[in-house]
Length: 322
Image (cartoon, rainbow, N blue to C red; front, side, top):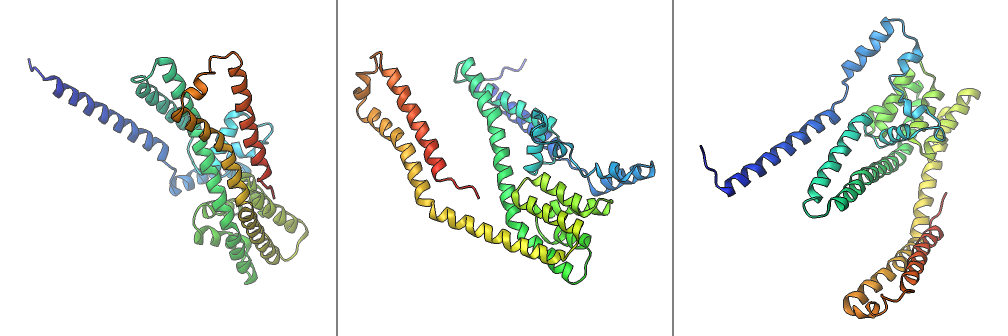
């Protein structure tokens, strides 16, 4: 029988744990990163057409059910799926839930070695559940900002194509092939909807619903009105592009003008915390002598509440909606 030294046994245990985590990560990565190829999507569409499917049934390949539900009536799962779509993640919510569950377990087992089980459960629940949601919301905001920044260029490219006589589907296809993501992928979906039989107004309405930005809604409304009443679509897109650019310029000017106010609100919000910590570190007896007083908790709660209220009020004063 082989007698392993304790240090060698510990090394083998750590290596086994490392290999297990590496294999688990690779398996989850393969499940989440797998995407349908163009050939698979084309074959699925051709099979539907061969079986006598209608145009609406074929177009369901391009429409996410979560994006079709009304915002007020949408359930928690639908809203979570919509968040994934708007964040640019083409994965099933099931795999995201499995990945989050694995993250919670890993955080729990890591924290349980240093903390009590109750604190480890709370820590794993906070960081494992709230953390991914915060990341998804940040990804959604970043993608929306990037798409909004690309939209005027896309409209200018469409307007130039329409001026030389190209059809709408061709100009949309040019945007999909010439501009990078996320605007390229979104206009690629619009192009596919038009090619599969959807009208232009419906395709852009789905785009606005899918993206969820005000500029996309303006574009959908403009194209819907032009589609119903007629007119020079090239001029409409050019004017809308200039309007969006002017609006973004105004946003930057307002942020520059309000920068001093926003910085002041941040300083005034964190200043009481900094003062309290500095007093606790330099003179622990300053609050320590009165901490046993029965009225101390009430005064502390009032001060904390006023500090939080001050932060919210100052944030509202320097936040502009336009």
